[in-house]
Length: 254
Length: 244
Image (cartoon, rainbow over all chains, first blue to last red):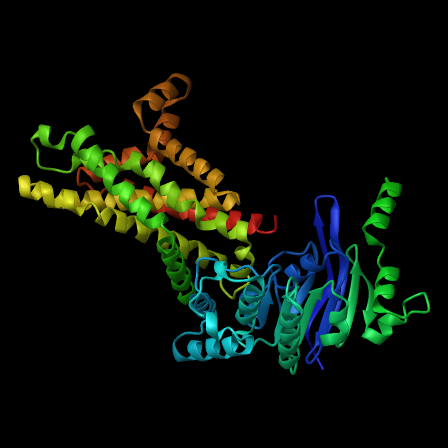
Protein backbone atom coordinates (compact mmCIF):
# COMPACT_ATOMS: atom_id res chain seq x y z
CA UNK A 1 0.00 0.00 0.00
CA UNK A 2 1.27 3.44 -0.94
CA UNK A 3 2.41 5.70 1.86
CA UNK A 4 0.21 8.73 2.54
CA UNK A 5 3.13 10.69 3.88
CA UNK A 6 6.59 10.25 2.47
CA UNK A 7 9.76 12.14 3.39
CA UNK A 8 12.83 11.59 1.25
CA UNK A 9 16.25 12.63 2.50
CA UNK A 10 15.21 15.91 4.13
CA UNK A 11 18.07 18.21 5.06
CA UNK A 12 17.78 21.63 6.67
CA UNK A 13 20.67 23.87 7.60
CA UNK A 14 20.54 27.09 9.57
CA UNK A 15 23.78 28.89 8.80
CA UNK A 16 26.46 26.40 9.84
CA UNK A 17 24.11 24.35 12.03
CA UNK A 18 22.47 21.32 10.44
CA UNK A 19 19.10 20.91 12.15
CA UNK A 20 17.88 18.00 10.04
CA UNK A 21 20.38 15.77 8.37
CA UNK A 22 18.83 13.34 5.90
CA UNK A 23 15.52 12.13 7.29
CA UNK A 24 13.49 9.66 5.23
CA UNK A 25 10.21 8.27 6.43
CA UNK A 26 7.11 6.75 5.02
CA UNK A 27 3.81 6.54 6.82
CA UNK A 28 1.01 4.35 5.39
CA UNK A 29 -2.69 4.67 6.13
CA UNK A 30 -3.75 3.44 9.56
CA UNK A 31 -0.42 4.19 11.14
CA UNK A 32 0.09 6.56 14.07
CA UNK A 33 3.76 7.41 14.06
CA UNK A 34 5.36 8.77 17.21
CA UNK A 35 8.13 11.18 16.41
CA UNK A 36 10.46 11.23 19.39
CA UNK A 37 13.69 12.93 20.23
CA UNK A 38 15.39 15.22 22.70
CA UNK A 39 14.69 18.96 22.54
CA UNK A 40 16.46 20.46 19.58
CA UNK A 41 16.79 17.13 17.77
CA UNK A 42 14.99 18.49 14.72
CA UNK A 43 11.45 17.24 15.28
CA UNK A 44 9.66 20.50 14.63
CA UNK A 45 11.95 21.43 11.76
CA UNK A 46 11.21 18.09 10.09
CA UNK A 47 7.48 18.60 10.56
CA UNK A 48 7.69 22.12 9.16
CA UNK A 49 9.34 20.73 6.04
CA UNK A 50 6.77 17.94 5.77
CA UNK A 51 3.98 20.54 5.77
CA UNK A 52 5.77 22.74 3.26
CA UNK A 53 6.12 25.65 5.69
CA UNK A 54 9.90 25.41 5.47
CA UNK A 55 11.77 24.72 2.28
CA UNK A 56 14.26 21.87 2.73
CA UNK A 57 17.84 22.41 1.56
CA UNK A 58 17.81 18.88 0.18
CA UNK A 59 15.22 16.17 -0.26
CA UNK A 60 11.47 16.34 -0.72
CA UNK A 61 8.20 15.61 1.00
CA UNK A 62 5.07 14.02 -0.46
CA UNK A 63 1.55 14.07 0.92
CA UNK A 64 -0.72 11.53 -0.78
CA UNK A 65 1.88 11.35 -3.52
CA UNK A 66 1.79 15.13 -4.14
CA UNK A 67 5.08 16.98 -3.87
CA UNK A 68 4.69 19.55 -1.10
CA UNK A 69 7.00 22.01 -2.80
CA UNK A 70 5.89 21.83 -6.40
CA UNK A 71 2.15 21.73 -5.65
CA UNK A 72 1.81 23.10 -2.12
CA UNK A 73 -1.86 24.05 -2.34
CA UNK A 74 -3.03 20.63 -3.46
CA UNK A 75 -0.79 18.88 -0.93
CA UNK A 76 -2.06 21.07 1.91
CA UNK A 77 -5.65 20.25 1.04
CA UNK A 78 -4.85 16.68 2.11
CA UNK A 79 -3.14 17.82 5.29
CA UNK A 80 -4.23 18.78 8.79
CA UNK A 81 -1.50 20.44 10.80
CA UNK A 82 -1.20 21.45 14.42
CA UNK A 83 1.89 23.68 14.67
CA UNK A 84 4.00 23.68 17.83
CA UNK A 85 2.24 25.53 20.65
CA UNK A 86 -1.12 25.44 18.83
CA UNK A 87 -1.02 29.05 17.60
CA UNK A 88 -4.40 30.69 16.98
CA UNK A 89 -5.75 34.20 16.59
CA UNK A 90 -6.25 35.08 20.25
CA UNK A 91 -8.85 37.80 19.88
CA UNK A 92 -11.17 35.57 17.87
CA UNK A 93 -13.93 33.50 19.45
CA UNK A 94 -13.54 29.77 18.82
CA UNK A 95 -16.39 29.63 16.37
CA UNK A 96 -15.15 32.54 14.23
CA UNK A 97 -11.68 31.04 14.19
CA UNK A 98 -12.94 27.68 12.96
CA UNK A 99 -15.15 29.42 10.43
CA UNK A 100 -12.11 31.27 9.12
CA UNK A 101 -10.11 28.03 8.81
CA UNK A 102 -13.03 26.37 7.04
CA UNK A 103 -13.38 29.28 4.62
CA UNK A 104 -9.66 29.15 3.84
CA UNK A 105 -10.19 25.50 2.94
CA UNK A 106 -13.10 26.35 0.70
CA UNK A 107 -15.66 24.96 3.12
CA UNK A 108 -18.50 27.46 3.40
CA UNK A 109 -22.26 27.48 3.88
CA UNK A 110 -23.88 24.29 5.11
CA UNK A 111 -20.81 22.23 4.21
CA UNK A 112 -18.67 24.46 6.42
CA UNK A 113 -21.20 24.39 9.25
CA UNK A 114 -21.34 20.59 9.16
CA UNK A 115 -17.54 20.33 9.23
CA UNK A 116 -17.28 22.75 12.15
CA UNK A 117 -20.03 20.96 14.09
CA UNK A 118 -18.30 17.64 13.65
CA UNK A 119 -14.86 18.92 14.67
CA UNK A 120 -16.34 20.77 17.64
CA UNK A 121 -18.12 17.60 18.75
CA UNK A 122 -14.97 15.52 18.48
CA UNK A 123 -12.86 17.99 20.45
CA UNK A 124 -15.69 18.77 22.90
CA UNK A 125 -15.56 22.52 22.38
CA UNK A 126 -19.33 22.96 22.30
CA UNK A 127 -19.49 24.96 25.53
CA UNK A 128 -16.90 27.60 24.64
CA UNK A 129 -17.73 28.49 21.04
CA UNK A 130 -18.24 32.20 21.73
CA UNK A 131 -15.23 32.58 24.02
CA UNK A 132 -12.16 34.45 22.69
CA UNK A 133 -9.30 31.97 22.34
CA UNK A 134 -6.83 34.07 24.34
CA UNK A 135 -9.00 33.83 27.45
CA UNK A 136 -9.00 30.04 27.42
CA UNK A 137 -6.82 27.50 29.24
CA UNK A 138 -3.92 25.73 27.58
CA UNK A 139 -5.93 22.54 27.23
CA UNK A 140 -8.76 24.30 25.43
CA UNK A 141 -6.35 26.13 23.14
CA UNK A 142 -4.76 22.83 22.18
CA UNK A 143 -8.21 21.42 21.41
CA UNK A 144 -9.02 24.43 19.24
CA UNK A 145 -5.80 23.72 17.33
CA UNK A 146 -6.82 20.10 16.93
CA UNK A 147 -10.32 21.03 15.79
CA UNK A 148 -8.79 23.25 13.12
CA UNK A 149 -6.52 20.40 11.97
CA UNK A 150 -9.29 17.81 11.59
CA UNK A 151 -11.90 20.18 10.18
CA UNK A 152 -11.64 18.91 6.61
CA UNK A 153 -11.13 15.22 7.50
CA UNK A 154 -7.64 15.15 5.99
CA UNK A 155 -5.98 11.82 5.10
CA UNK A 156 -2.71 13.06 6.63
CA UNK A 157 -2.45 14.62 10.10
CA UNK A 158 0.74 16.15 11.44
CA UNK A 159 0.48 17.13 15.09
CA UNK A 160 3.40 18.84 16.80
CA UNK A 161 3.22 18.05 20.52
CA UNK A 162 -0.57 17.66 20.66
CA UNK A 163 -0.60 16.79 24.38
CA UNK A 164 2.08 19.19 25.62
CA UNK A 165 0.96 21.03 28.74
CA UNK A 166 -2.30 19.12 29.16
CA UNK A 167 -3.42 17.51 32.40
CA UNK A 168 -3.77 13.71 32.52
CA UNK A 169 -7.49 13.82 31.73
CA UNK A 170 -7.00 16.08 28.75
CA UNK A 171 -4.09 13.93 27.53
CA UNK A 172 -6.27 10.87 27.70
CA UNK A 173 -8.98 12.65 25.74
CA UNK A 174 -6.60 13.82 22.99
CA UNK A 175 -5.10 10.34 22.69
CA UNK A 176 -8.56 8.83 22.30
CA UNK A 177 -9.32 11.36 19.62
CA UNK A 178 -6.11 10.46 17.77
CA UNK A 179 -6.88 6.75 18.00
CA UNK A 180 -10.40 7.40 16.72
CA UNK A 181 -9.05 9.33 13.77
CA UNK A 182 -6.36 6.77 12.91
CA UNK A 183 -8.39 4.49 10.65
CA UNK A 184 -7.51 5.10 7.02
CA UNK A 185 -5.26 8.03 7.87
CA UNK A 186 -1.57 8.61 8.33
CA UNK A 187 -0.91 10.45 11.57
CA UNK A 188 2.40 11.78 12.84
CA UNK A 189 2.64 13.10 16.37
CA UNK A 190 5.78 14.55 17.86
CA UNK A 191 6.28 14.24 21.56
CA UNK A 192 8.90 13.85 24.23
CA UNK A 193 6.51 12.00 26.48
CA UNK A 194 7.47 8.36 26.03
CA UNK A 195 4.28 6.93 27.53
CA UNK A 196 2.53 8.37 24.49
CA UNK A 197 4.17 5.70 22.34
CA UNK A 198 2.44 2.88 24.21
CA UNK A 199 -0.78 4.85 24.48
CA UNK A 200 -1.42 5.77 20.85
CA UNK A 201 1.43 5.00 18.46
CA UNK A 202 1.63 1.96 16.25
CA UNK A 203 5.22 2.81 15.44
CA UNK A 204 7.86 5.19 16.74
CA UNK A 205 10.90 6.89 15.31
CA UNK A 206 13.57 8.41 17.52
CA UNK A 207 15.68 11.17 16.05
CA UNK A 208 18.79 12.72 17.48
CA UNK A 209 20.76 15.65 16.11
CA UNK A 210 18.87 15.59 12.84
CA UNK A 211 19.13 11.86 12.14
CA UNK A 212 16.91 8.84 12.69
CA UNK A 213 18.54 6.66 15.32
CA UNK A 214 15.75 4.14 15.96
CA UNK A 215 12.60 3.04 14.15
CA UNK A 216 10.10 0.39 15.19
CA UNK A 217 7.18 -0.59 17.40
CA UNK A 218 7.29 0.19 21.09
CA UNK A 219 8.42 -3.38 21.84
CA UNK A 220 11.18 -3.26 19.26
CA UNK A 221 12.43 0.01 20.72
CA UNK A 222 12.47 -1.44 24.22
CA UNK A 223 14.92 -4.11 23.08
CA UNK A 224 17.44 -1.34 22.39
CA UNK A 225 17.75 -0.66 26.11
CA UNK A 226 21.13 -1.88 27.35
CA UNK A 227 20.26 -2.89 30.93
CA UNK A 228 17.91 -5.52 32.26
CA UNK A 229 15.07 -3.10 32.67
CA UNK A 230 13.80 -2.97 29.11
CA UNK A 231 12.00 0.36 29.31
CA UNK A 232 11.41 2.96 26.64
CA UNK A 233 13.18 5.48 28.86
CA UNK A 234 16.33 3.41 28.90
CA UNK A 235 16.17 2.79 25.18
CA UNK A 236 15.66 6.49 24.51
CA UNK A 237 18.66 7.41 26.62
CA UNK A 238 20.78 4.75 24.96
CA UNK A 239 20.16 5.89 21.39
CA UNK A 240 20.16 9.67 21.93
CA UNK A 241 23.34 11.34 23.02
CA UNK A 242 21.58 13.97 25.09
CA UNK A 243 22.45 17.63 25.08
CA UNK A 244 25.50 17.37 27.34
CA UNK A 245 27.11 14.58 25.36
CA UNK A 246 26.26 16.32 22.10
CA UNK A 247 27.91 19.53 23.23
CA UNK A 248 30.97 17.65 24.44
CA UNK A 249 31.31 15.96 21.10
CA UNK A 250 30.87 19.24 19.23
CA UNK A 251 33.55 20.78 21.40
CA UNK A 252 35.84 17.85 20.68
CA UNK A 253 35.27 18.27 16.94
CA UNK A 254 36.30 21.92 17.13
CA UNK B 1 -10.74 34.24 -4.26
CA UNK B 2 -12.63 32.89 -1.25
CA UNK B 3 -9.35 32.78 0.68
CA UNK B 4 -8.63 36.48 0.02
CA UNK B 5 -12.10 37.22 1.31
CA UNK B 6 -11.61 35.02 4.38
CA UNK B 7 -8.33 36.76 5.27
CA UNK B 8 -9.91 40.15 4.59
CA UNK B 9 -12.88 39.47 6.86
CA UNK B 10 -10.73 38.07 9.64
CA UNK B 11 -8.32 40.99 9.49
CA UNK B 12 -11.03 43.65 9.41
CA UNK B 13 -12.91 42.13 12.32
CA UNK B 14 -9.53 41.90 14.06
CA UNK B 15 -9.29 45.70 14.00
CA UNK B 16 -12.66 46.07 15.64
CA UNK B 17 -12.14 43.23 18.15
CA UNK B 18 -9.80 45.47 20.13
CA UNK B 19 -10.14 49.15 21.09
CA UNK B 20 -7.41 50.02 18.52
CA UNK B 21 -9.95 50.72 15.80
CA UNK B 22 -12.02 53.14 17.86
CA UNK B 23 -9.00 54.93 19.30
CA UNK B 24 -7.65 55.32 15.79
CA UNK B 25 -10.92 56.60 14.35
CA UNK B 26 -11.41 59.13 17.14
CA UNK B 27 -7.86 60.45 16.90
CA UNK B 28 -8.03 60.64 13.13
CA UNK B 29 -11.27 62.61 13.16
CA UNK B 30 -10.03 64.91 15.92
CA UNK B 31 -6.76 65.62 14.13
CA UNK B 32 -8.55 66.16 10.82
CA UNK B 33 -10.78 68.76 12.44
CA UNK B 34 -7.86 70.39 14.20
CA UNK B 35 -5.78 70.68 11.04
CA UNK B 36 -8.67 71.83 8.88
CA UNK B 37 -10.02 74.53 11.16
CA UNK B 38 -7.03 75.75 13.14
CA UNK B 39 -3.91 75.01 11.12
CA UNK B 40 -5.61 75.17 7.72
CA UNK B 41 -7.77 78.21 8.64
CA UNK B 42 -10.87 76.94 6.85
CA UNK B 43 -12.99 79.87 8.00
CA UNK B 44 -10.47 82.66 7.58
CA UNK B 45 -9.65 81.68 4.00
CA UNK B 46 -13.18 82.43 2.95
CA UNK B 47 -13.10 79.76 0.24
CA UNK B 48 -15.57 76.89 0.35
CA UNK B 49 -13.36 73.89 -0.37
CA UNK B 50 -11.56 71.16 1.55
CA UNK B 51 -8.00 72.10 0.58
CA UNK B 52 -7.14 72.87 4.22
CA UNK B 53 -8.01 69.26 5.04
CA UNK B 54 -6.51 67.42 2.09
CA UNK B 55 -3.22 69.30 2.19
CA UNK B 56 -2.49 67.72 5.58
CA UNK B 57 -3.72 64.22 4.71
CA UNK B 58 -0.31 62.93 3.48
CA UNK B 59 1.23 64.01 6.81
CA UNK B 60 -1.61 62.68 8.96
CA UNK B 61 -1.47 59.37 7.13
CA UNK B 62 2.28 59.30 7.52
CA UNK B 63 1.83 58.49 11.19
CA UNK B 64 -1.60 56.89 11.23
CA UNK B 65 -1.42 54.45 8.30
CA UNK B 66 1.79 52.70 9.47
CA UNK B 67 -0.05 52.30 12.79
CA UNK B 68 -2.75 50.36 10.94
CA UNK B 69 -0.22 48.36 8.95
CA UNK B 70 2.19 47.50 11.75
CA UNK B 71 0.29 44.53 13.10
CA UNK B 72 -0.55 42.92 9.75
CA UNK B 73 2.42 40.51 9.67
CA UNK B 74 4.49 41.11 12.79
CA UNK B 75 1.60 39.94 14.96
CA UNK B 76 1.38 36.72 12.94
CA UNK B 77 5.08 36.13 13.40
CA UNK B 78 5.09 36.96 17.10
CA UNK B 79 2.22 34.60 17.93
CA UNK B 80 3.23 31.88 15.47
CA UNK B 81 -0.07 32.00 13.60
CA UNK B 82 1.91 32.61 10.43
CA UNK B 83 2.69 28.89 10.45
CA UNK B 84 -0.99 28.14 10.54
CA UNK B 85 -1.88 30.71 7.90
CA UNK B 86 0.81 29.60 5.46
CA UNK B 87 0.06 25.89 5.77
CA UNK B 88 -3.58 26.38 4.84
CA UNK B 89 -4.23 25.57 1.18
CA UNK B 90 -3.94 29.13 0.00
CA UNK B 91 -1.24 31.15 -1.75
CA UNK B 92 0.83 33.67 0.16
CA UNK B 93 -0.28 36.46 -2.15
CA UNK B 94 -3.91 35.81 -1.16
CA UNK B 95 -3.00 36.54 2.44
CA UNK B 96 -0.98 39.60 1.38
CA UNK B 97 -3.88 40.91 -0.68
CA UNK B 98 -6.54 40.15 1.92
CA UNK B 99 -4.63 41.92 4.67
CA UNK B 100 -3.93 44.98 2.52
CA UNK B 101 -7.57 45.19 1.51
CA UNK B 102 -8.70 45.03 5.13
CA UNK B 103 -6.38 47.93 5.99
CA UNK B 104 -7.68 49.90 3.01
CA UNK B 105 -11.32 49.42 3.98
CA UNK B 106 -10.44 50.50 7.48
CA UNK B 107 -8.87 53.71 6.15
CA UNK B 108 -11.96 54.21 3.98
CA UNK B 109 -14.08 54.03 7.13
CA UNK B 110 -11.80 56.62 8.76
CA UNK B 111 -12.12 58.89 5.72
CA UNK B 112 -15.89 58.44 5.75
CA UNK B 113 -15.87 59.78 9.31
CA UNK B 114 -14.62 63.11 7.94
CA UNK B 115 -17.65 63.55 5.68
CA UNK B 116 -19.13 66.11 8.14
CA UNK B 117 -16.32 68.41 6.93
CA UNK B 118 -17.62 67.98 3.40
CA UNK B 119 -21.14 68.75 4.56
CA UNK B 120 -19.87 71.83 6.43
CA UNK B 121 -18.27 73.42 3.35
CA UNK B 122 -21.44 72.72 1.38
CA UNK B 123 -23.41 74.50 4.07
CA UNK B 124 -20.99 77.42 4.05
CA UNK B 125 -20.77 77.89 0.31
CA UNK B 126 -20.73 76.16 -3.05
CA UNK B 127 -17.60 74.02 -3.31
CA UNK B 128 -16.67 71.99 -6.36
CA UNK B 129 -17.87 68.62 -5.12
CA UNK B 130 -16.22 66.82 -8.02
CA UNK B 131 -12.82 68.07 -6.85
CA UNK B 132 -13.58 66.97 -3.31
CA UNK B 133 -14.65 63.51 -4.48
CA UNK B 134 -11.42 63.11 -6.47
CA UNK B 135 -9.46 64.35 -3.45
CA UNK B 136 -11.03 61.67 -1.29
CA UNK B 137 -10.15 59.09 -3.92
CA UNK B 138 -6.59 60.41 -3.98
CA UNK B 139 -6.36 60.22 -0.20
CA UNK B 140 -7.51 56.60 -0.29
CA UNK B 141 -5.05 55.76 -3.06
CA UNK B 142 -2.26 57.33 -1.02
CA UNK B 143 -3.31 55.29 1.99
CA UNK B 144 -3.17 52.18 -0.20
CA UNK B 145 0.45 52.92 -1.08
CA UNK B 146 1.37 53.67 2.55
CA UNK B 147 -0.37 50.46 3.64
CA UNK B 148 1.57 48.40 1.11
CA UNK B 149 4.83 49.94 2.34
CA UNK B 150 3.86 49.58 6.01
CA UNK B 151 2.76 45.98 5.47
CA UNK B 152 6.13 45.15 3.95
CA UNK B 153 7.90 46.68 6.95
CA UNK B 154 5.61 44.67 9.22
CA UNK B 155 6.67 41.48 7.44
CA UNK B 156 10.30 42.28 8.26
CA UNK B 157 9.97 42.02 12.01
CA UNK B 158 7.97 40.33 14.73
CA UNK B 159 8.07 43.53 16.76
CA UNK B 160 5.16 45.90 16.08
CA UNK B 161 6.97 48.97 17.37
CA UNK B 162 9.88 48.39 15.02
CA UNK B 163 7.41 47.74 12.21
CA UNK B 164 5.75 51.08 12.95
CA UNK B 165 9.00 53.07 13.05
CA UNK B 166 10.24 51.43 9.83
CA UNK B 167 6.86 52.11 8.20
CA UNK B 168 6.89 55.80 9.12
CA UNK B 169 10.49 56.15 7.95
CA UNK B 170 9.87 54.45 4.61
CA UNK B 171 6.69 56.44 3.93
CA UNK B 172 8.47 59.63 4.97
CA UNK B 173 11.09 59.05 2.28
CA UNK B 174 8.40 58.74 -0.39
CA UNK B 175 6.57 61.83 0.81
CA UNK B 176 9.54 64.14 1.15
CA UNK B 177 11.26 62.92 -2.02
CA UNK B 178 9.23 65.46 -3.99
CA UNK B 179 9.63 68.46 -1.71
CA UNK B 180 11.80 71.41 -2.84
CA UNK B 181 14.22 70.89 0.04
CA UNK B 182 15.14 67.41 -1.09
CA UNK B 183 14.99 68.13 -4.83
CA UNK B 184 17.06 71.33 -4.62
CA UNK B 185 19.62 69.60 -2.47
CA UNK B 186 19.74 66.71 -4.89
CA UNK B 187 20.14 69.06 -7.86
CA UNK B 188 23.45 70.24 -6.41
CA UNK B 189 24.97 66.76 -6.52
CA UNK B 190 23.05 64.79 -9.15
CA UNK B 191 22.16 65.26 -12.83
CA UNK B 192 18.67 66.45 -13.77
CA UNK B 193 17.29 63.00 -14.79
CA UNK B 194 18.01 61.68 -11.30
CA UNK B 195 16.20 64.66 -9.78
CA UNK B 196 13.25 64.08 -12.07
CA UNK B 197 13.17 60.37 -11.23
CA UNK B 198 13.19 61.25 -7.56
CA UNK B 199 10.31 63.67 -8.04
CA UNK B 200 8.39 61.06 -10.03
CA UNK B 201 8.69 58.58 -7.17
CA UNK B 202 7.35 61.02 -4.64
CA UNK B 203 3.87 60.82 -3.24
CA UNK B 204 3.47 64.59 -3.05
CA UNK B 205 4.08 65.15 -6.77
CA UNK B 206 1.17 62.89 -7.70
CA UNK B 207 -1.04 63.68 -4.78
CA UNK B 208 -0.98 67.41 -5.56
CA UNK B 209 -2.77 66.87 -8.86
CA UNK B 210 -5.42 64.64 -7.29
CA UNK B 211 -5.97 67.28 -4.65
CA UNK B 212 -6.88 69.76 -7.35
CA UNK B 213 -9.32 67.27 -8.82
CA UNK B 214 -6.99 66.12 -11.57
CA UNK B 215 -6.73 62.41 -12.30
CA UNK B 216 -3.77 62.14 -14.65
CA UNK B 217 -2.10 59.04 -16.02
CA UNK B 218 1.22 59.41 -14.13
CA UNK B 219 -0.66 59.55 -10.83
CA UNK B 220 -2.64 56.42 -11.67
CA UNK B 221 0.48 54.59 -12.84
CA UNK B 222 2.38 55.70 -9.75
CA UNK B 223 -0.36 54.53 -7.38
CA UNK B 224 -0.84 51.17 -9.06
CA UNK B 225 2.83 50.40 -9.56
CA UNK B 226 3.88 51.49 -6.06
CA UNK B 227 1.10 49.43 -4.49
CA UNK B 228 1.85 46.41 -6.66
CA UNK B 229 5.59 46.65 -6.04
CA UNK B 230 5.29 46.88 -2.27
CA UNK B 231 2.68 44.10 -2.09
CA UNK B 232 5.02 41.94 -4.14
CA UNK B 233 7.89 42.86 -1.83
CA UNK B 234 5.69 41.93 1.12
CA UNK B 235 5.02 38.48 -0.33
CA UNK B 236 8.72 37.91 -0.95
CA UNK B 237 9.62 39.10 2.55
CA UNK B 238 6.99 36.86 4.15
CA UNK B 239 8.33 33.85 2.27
CA UNK B 240 11.95 34.65 3.10
CA UNK B 241 11.44 35.43 6.76
CA UNK B 242 8.87 32.79 7.72
CA UNK B 243 11.40 30.26 8.91
CA UNK B 244 13.42 32.71 10.97
